[in-house]
Length: 225
Ligand code: C5P
Image (cartoon, rainbow, N blue to C red; front, side, top):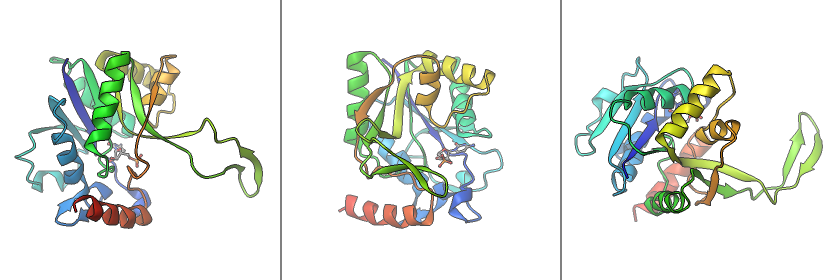
């Protein structure tokens, strides 16, 4: 079985309030993107790593990724466009499965990635890392209208792992039907196909805001001890 990793890294990081994208923030002496890529490089199951980078990106070329053997592909307007571009770029030598992991999630543990891959291959169905919602969840705008029962609520994380052809078709269908797709699993769900929930560590956070960055920097310093 061949497995390719796709790392969408073409976001602009608007919610960080910075003029450079969050995947290029430094944690210690490496950028967030480099931390993420070195995690993936430590997953023996992965045959190839594709990174989707924006056409106007002025940072990627300056990184020294020679030890990691990654292939750069062009990102798109939305995250789903970046992932679809990466899948299309490997069309001539398609892998059996693809593992999509956000550039902005450097804290993922290799053991969680391996667990996701093994569980999905055992059951022969796609799946995602997810963590059970811990807080009490409200629905509303200015006032709470409802407390949503949380027993069956999960927070979707990445990696997300699907057969190549299944994900390609689902993302193309979602684009054609102009469906909102904020992760790979939502495209698969909209195609009526199963998405296995594999419990992962909740500290696999996505760096989105300055608070996330501070927390990620602390957690990363603990991991490297
Ligand atoms: O914006 P968000 O936090 O959901 O981004 C998740 C990941 O998707 C980030 O790693 C970001 O760089 C990437 N992304 C992308 N192409 C876009 C938008 C986001 O590859 N057009």
